[in-house]
Length: 309
Image 1 (tube, rainbow, N blue to C red):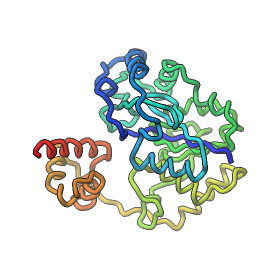
Image 2 (tube, rainbow, N blue to C red; image 1 turned 60 degrees about the horizontal axis):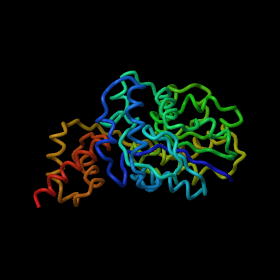
Image 3 (spheres, helix red, strand yellow; image 1 turned 90 degrees about the vertical axis):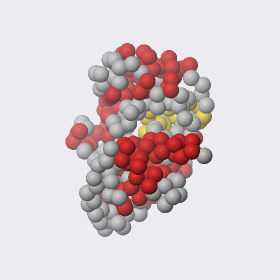
Image 4 (cartoon, rainbow, N blue to C red; image 1 turned 90 degrees about the horizontal axis):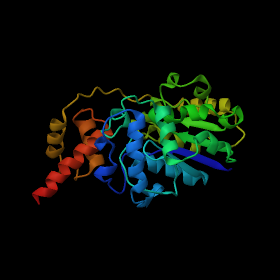
């Protein structure tokens, strides 16, 4: 089976980005102005690592696991670099479509529209659109693990596909499918909170939900290339049926300063590890904190600890 995996980029990277390539340092303006400022910086930046080795974190690991299982090609949707293949050399950068992050492009581009930003970005880099790339390649099946914000970037592209090509795609990630055109909704597999339940084979966090759903599908459901969208949809529902809903936990909010103080307080208990510290914060302290925000706060605390030595 000639398969393709399409996944999103990640905020975490194996090489830190320079200040020059962080969206937060761009001057605010309309999309044309921001693209005109951003694209030359990327073009001039040194290409330092292959894309599949640049992105890290569980979401990307899950996508790569599915890629190996299928022996598939992988493309990456990046709000900063456009459409890139996993074996392409890229620069390290911080520009994202994730709204909870400082380098989110919607914080900079005052008239931000996902599909228009995507179109302008591809044009600035001289890249071919997703629909043209898919039409020109003979993939049997296409698996797209994309959070809502990243699917929104390429929604208009996907809707330009013929019915024959669109029916090859299975989409994982969005929970609020009503935000998408009906023609695309039909390709979104019905994974829900049961993937986080106490008897789930692949529990995790919302940030890696799309890629975990993809892995579950690849390993437990997708065994034929001739299954219809309706058959795959029904098979996902059957697989979810024995899974229990997660226990609802009401967590309180804290300021950045308060969370940093908590991290310091259980530093030894967490062994100075970010993942373990986040679990303590959420499970034991019952504090709510988005994973990207927590990672930045943890790094800040760690720098302070290192400076004490």
